[in-house]
Every structure is written in structure tokens, then in C-alpha cells.
Image (cartoon, rainbow, N blue to C red; front, side, top):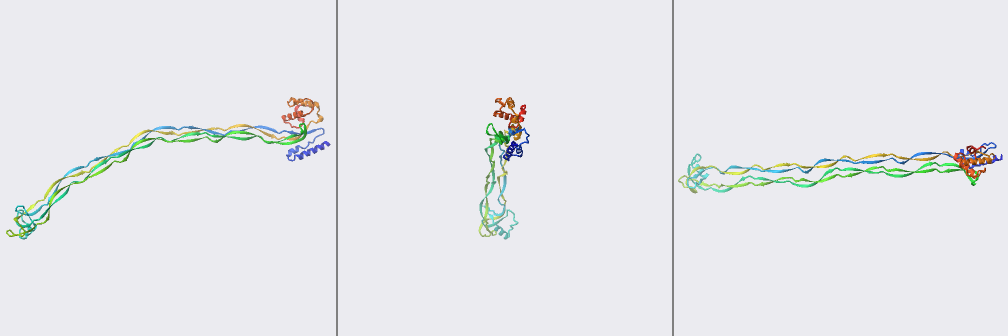
Length: 458
């Protein structure tokens, strides 16, 4: 009964010391309802673990690019090397001779004397003769009268006429040409695709392989063999493994390189100034002829035949006479058809050249690279360690022969290397603990579970 009370005090102390433990842990510290002759000890049931495998990404999916080059072909192309133009030729004008009869002296009826010199009779004489009773109006040509007169005054004038009309000559001013250099396309501009490979980064990632766990461990008080029965709840930190994986920083792509067009310089004859017609005027030509013009009439005074008349006596009788018109025939050159021009068309000149063209543009073929994984092993706790009361072999129930049997069995299991002396020393206790740990049994003394597992009879 005394021992029981001390055990009760120890249990109460343990409960107070572990007030921060869970309800299950505290309940485990309470002494069992033991029967007389039974012995119990606080033993540690180790945590149970399991190892699992997990696939983790080690390389992201990516893709490769293959550039399929462009295809080209050639075609014939006509290019202008000389522009169309025209040439002017002259069709000269034609002329013709024209004969013309012109009046050089008017017709007139007049009186003249029969004397030498044929002096004309003035109108006053005729009027006077008529007034004097002479039958002037009905007088026949050739009839004569006597007259006295003051002669009329005449002057000679030169008259100008056009002998050749004004015209014009046409002069062709030829067209002028110049050679200019022109750029002709012989190969179209195109593009070339160049692969820009992907870039990668190496990323390290921590993978949890064993989580943090809390376990009960027995504490030694003063030395290796001094067990004071103190159990410590110890936290073992989580364990991680660093996994390095390759990730895509920038995906593969393509870069377009522009290929400029190719040109060829050719000389082209081009019209600088077109042909033109220059008109040169030909002035008209004139000729002159002479005509007599009366500037003052003669004055007459008449007297009958046998009477002395006033003025100068003509010395003859006058006769009525007529002078016909006088004409002159002249010839002049006139334009029949004016000069003109005729346009002759000169066609353009062409040259055939080879031109390179794109038949099929370059393209990019993308090939997918799948992602890669690696397998990581993880150790996870299935059940935590715990401290509980387990029935142990009482000191009174075990003797030296039982200890020797225990030492022999532990040696056969490879846990004990000490002497088979029947004494429970530090080596024996260490061997029992190693065996319990290996078999997953609760640790904390020589328990009935150890005795039963080793096949030892009490």
C-alpha cells in the first residue's frame, strides 16, 4: 500500500509536469489498475512512418523550332529601255502663177485738136461750145471745133502692187533626248526566318520528405545507466530535399531578317524636248508701175471760129475723140497650199530580263518537347510516438538464467556482444532497446512483449 501511494504521487507529478500535453498524452501517464504481483513501466511506443514516392516536375514542357526556307522562282519581265516618240517631217507649201489684168489708165472721152501734139479740149471748152450752140452731145466722134485753152496740169505717180504674197516657211526643230539611269527590280524583297533558341533557368525547390514530428524520449539523469524515469517530449524538425529543375525562361521563337529587293540600273533613252515646228515668215514682194494723174484741170475760153479767143489759141479746130481704157497684164506668185508637217510615230523599245520572285515564303515548324519528371521519396509519420504504461517483467519474476536466455537471444539477433553473465547491465539494456526499435515495440525496459517476441519462457 505504501508503494502504491508513492506511485500515485509520481503519477500526479507527471500529470502536473505535462499540463501542456494533449489529453491522450496525459491519460497515458496515469498508472494502470495493476493487480498484486504485476509490474508496469513507462515505455515509449515509437512513431510509425511510411515512405511514399512523389513525381515532381524537373523540366518544363517546351518546343523546338525548325525553319523551312522560302522557295524562289524566276519570271521574264519586259522593261522599257526607250520611250515611244514621234518625228515630224515637213510637207512644203506649193505656189502657183496668177496672171492679172490691171487698169493703168481710165477710158475717157475728150476733145482734141487736129493740130500737132493733139492738145486735149477742156470741159469748159465743150460746155462753152455747147452753150455756143454747138451740138456737143450729139456730135459724132471725129467732129472738130476750134478752141482756146489753158492746158491742164498732170503729175506722174508710182503705184505699188503685191507681186508675191507673204508666206511662211516651216523649219523642223528635232526632238532632243537624254539618257537617264533607272533602277529595275530583278529580285523581290523577301524575309528569312532565323531560330532564336529558348533560354532556361535552373530553379531549386525544397520538397518536404519528412514532416516535423513530436516524439517521447527517455532522459538519462546522471549517467548512461542511471534511469530516473523522466520522459521528454522532443520535436524533430521536418526534413527537406532540394530538387533542382530546369524551367523555360523564354520560349523558342524566330527572328525575321528582312532581305532587301535587288535592283539593276539600266540606261533608258527618254524624250527631253519634243520636236517642234519653227515658222519663218517670208515677206510679200511688191512691184511698181507708173500712172499719170491729173492735178489741175485746164481752163479754156472759146471763141467762134474766126474770132479771137481768150487765152492761148490752140491753133486748130477741136475734134471730139475718145481714148479707151489702158490695161497692163502682170504675173504674180501666190500660195496654192500652205506648208504643213507630218508626224511619224516611233514605237517604244523594251528589253526582257529575268526577275526572281518568291514562290513559297519561309515558315516555322514547331515540335513540342514534353515536360520531364523525377521521383522523390517522402517519409511521412503514420502514427506519432507515445508514452504509455506497459506490463514489464518484475524483478522477482526474473532470475539469472532468464537473463542469460535473454542475452543469448539478443546475441543471436545481432544486438548483443557482451558476456552471457545473467546480469542486466548497460549493454543488455541497450540491446533490448535496439531490438524493441527494430521490431517496432515500445521501448522502456524488459517488457513482456520483448520476452514473448524472443520466445523466452518465464
